[in-house]
Length: 209
Image (cartoon, rainbow, N blue to C red; front, side, top):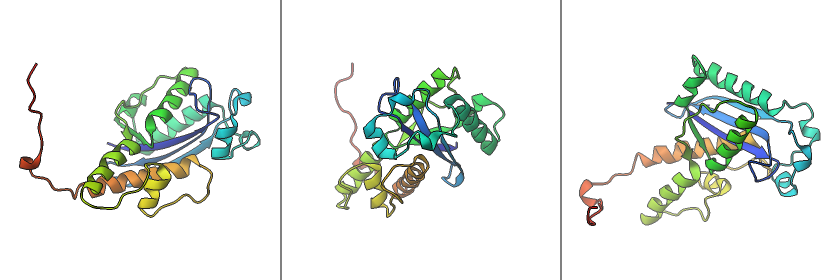
């Protein structure tokens, strides 16, 4: 089961109003070995919808996007990349890919709106792997065992905990995908070291319906 870790930069925070202007992704095999990376800017259909807060996060301007493809062109190229790298037979095989990210539901919403606007069917799995959710569970276990944990669950804090950081202060979709993928891999690898006895587990003992 391959893993696709992705991130998007957008013109704002509302998926049904704002647009993707950059998509970055890292493809991993089922043992979290990196297969390939992808990065593309996107020219927005509504350039007037750039929000100042979003621009401050990614530092992308319309001038930076002048030569970028439109969203439907990028999505087609993105899928071709995935199909080629994984040697898939058709688009329906994309359901084998587990989508991953930091607070990934938001990015999935943006991507699904982009698919809808481009009149393309959504073929990806509905079983995402979210670094934010996994980190919350993972660090609770560490804290219960007296191990120091980060003060927040932001990508910056989680990556710093594992000794990684962004090269710049502004966000880049590929760089954030790489950091997210490495954090996921480390958490899953470390989790395999946890040992627990069945007798120590707590099970529900309430009344049955």
